[in-house]
Amino acid sequence: MPKEQNILYASKKEKGFSSLQLKNIAIFAMLIDHLAITFLRELAIHSPINSFLFITYSVLRGFGRLTMPLMVFCLVEGFIYTRSLSKYLMRLFIFALISHFPYVFFNTGDWGLHISELKLFHTSIIANFFLALFALYVGMKTKLNILLKLLVIFILLVLSWFCDWSFYPIILAFVFYYLHEHKILKSIAFIFTIPFWTILHDWAKVVSYNSNLGLPKMFTVSIDKTVEFFNTYYQYQLFFLGLLLPIPFFILYNGKPGKKSKAIKYFFYVFYPLHLLILGFIRFQL
Image (cartoon, rainbow, N blue to C red; front, top):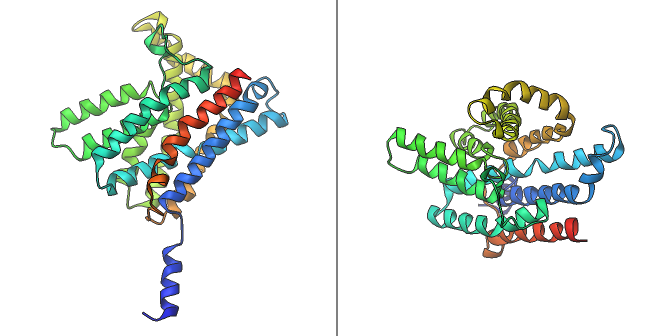
């Protein structure tokens, strides 16, 4: 191949974003999000919603909404192309265990060793990534009959309620998998998941708050209470509009993994619990 053609081919190959670049963007957005929580949250939620502080906080949190969808997007790419799914699952499982206590510490200032009620248990997004990957494995790779597959995936969805972002990563994992070759359809489907998840997310909060009422009352009062909850707190959820931000990155993804090395592979797994510990210390101990 002539030199000029070779250069042209290389430049075409490099257009768009690789999986590694998407992960780096996601990590940066996550850091911005957590910095906003650490330094601005307490001041912002007690400020007028039209104040510069509250708007700045909401914008930074909105930017942080890039992280979860981009990481699930990359998770699905990993599921499709990984050489060893079992190692991938084991890696996520181990780091989910490692990340649990830094996650709790960052959010509460406590290590979460004494939980009086199951509903108070909450763990990190890494655990949810593990559940999403395992759900894909059950749904796409096993030879179980369809009813058994659905039962296992339903159990994983229930378990995801105890993780950051609840069931959303599992839903997105299947959307991204089934529409893997269709960038525009994938983006449209993703847009439709946003109000679906937001409504169920608020409903789940209301059900949790009313769990002391017992069954079935905790569910029967939940619909009206969910509407009331949204009307009262919607301005504090406007940053969820940031979930629209990943769409251009889905479309511009070039299908390439990017540079590979062990250091790069493990960077996120180490960075995630480490930065939570540091920011948790700043937030609650200083």
